[in-house]
Image (cartoon, rainbow, N blue to C red; front, side, top):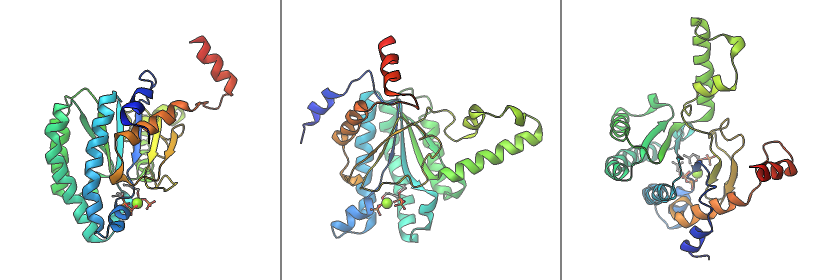
Length: 256
Ligand code: IPE
Ligand code: IPE
Ligand code: MG
């Protein structure tokens, strides 16, 4: 295994992904493999969140989106959902001073109407307390699903067309972008999913159009900075073509 410092020195600091999105998966299996309850895995997953947020901030990444809870996750057993909500509130309360110390601004995307009031209040407080920070933008996807987001965007565009504030003939990709919950953020350039699952699970379907996808077998509670560095090193080896040919991309690089 390559040492953490060696991996870090391999990273080209001038070619970092501006936005990294992570599907933090595998907490439940990690716990079950240790003969523990699933919630034990979620609890340890928080340590990975802390480590990765710190790692991203140290590197100077602009945006980090973490998929923490999907719309579909509401269908899990009541005990797990309740445990996750309590963990969320507890974590936010503990982490806000650290976010402030590291100049990290918290954002949230998702269907906030679904959250219990105590969680929503804690979240709103944290958003407010970190809103002046200008370093890493940490975006938590909570009660989020991409289909929910797209349906919501279409509904709101429809409302504004009816009101007359937008002309349907003028609707373009920029219009749709403005109605997404990610309107203020650039699209992710690198998407990581842990725990050996090869699917998107309703995460940022539109925004991931040209993201580089990176899958690792590492379960989320075991994921640390060195794993993030590995993903970034892998990203930096890829040729991103955006529909063009490889030689066009090489020409573009030579010109710039
Ligand atoms: C990811 O881990 C965390 C959440 C979805 C809340 P899982 O809970 O999905 O863990 P596995 O995939 O069952 O192992
Ligand atoms: C996706 O993980 C959601 C989060 C990581 C929050 P799931 O574990 O819920 O996804 P599926 O059900 O395996 O696709
Ligand atoms: Mg899972």
